[in-house]
Length: 296
Image (cartoon, rainbow, N blue to C red; front, side, top):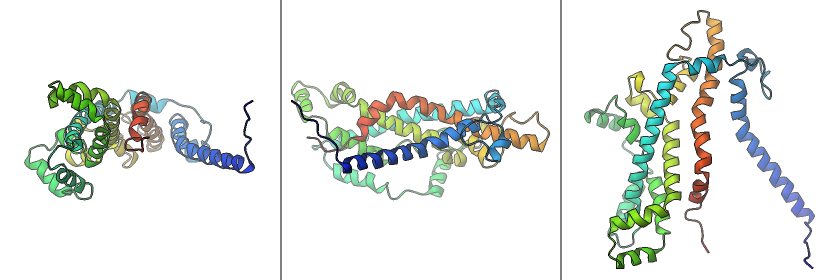
């Protein structure tokens, strides 16, 4: 007969406190997003007076109609997707090319190179020297400063190197005995075994690029190249909706009302790609966050 161990009073108390804290943290994370969602199709006047906090009031979809009919926002959407895809591809490729040699024990001088990369975690060239470099390279008002500058950093190299160090050394030795070159080994063995870390690196690059606007603010002047986050910044901070969002409204009061709807609506529209993408990469992402953990 299998005996079932009953929980003690301390165990029950621990579970109650644990679940209470976890539920509280979950609500702290989910409620702001929920509030923005219901505020995006509620009457802005009711939102401003605090009537909207759990249930939408005065439902209206005028904000979304104006957002979806505005070409500038869709152009920013396209630009952000382009920048995110390019950053993910370039950043992931560079991280793998840098991290794999650093993970090899037979790579001479790997500690010196690793120290060189690690220094960049604490120091960088600064905004003004970087700006002058981009100008001297004739990259101003092009997509390349926005794509290349945030594409790679030492943090992702360290993560990728830690993953590659965990790959079985016996595979490389067997492949080497069969005459497999380093490039063939990377392509045929390392990359197929590295799907979790590739997904993690790509997700890091996409999130970093999608949420970034500062590089675009500094290096881009043509509004046709603005990413969605820069357009969102102009709406949220400067109350300056782009395109034809408010071109047909003459009343200042009505403009302020519509701006309130557009603010929340654009936030939801901007967050959708990451919310859709994450469930597909969640399995790999969970594997990636355990990189470097104790194995036994």
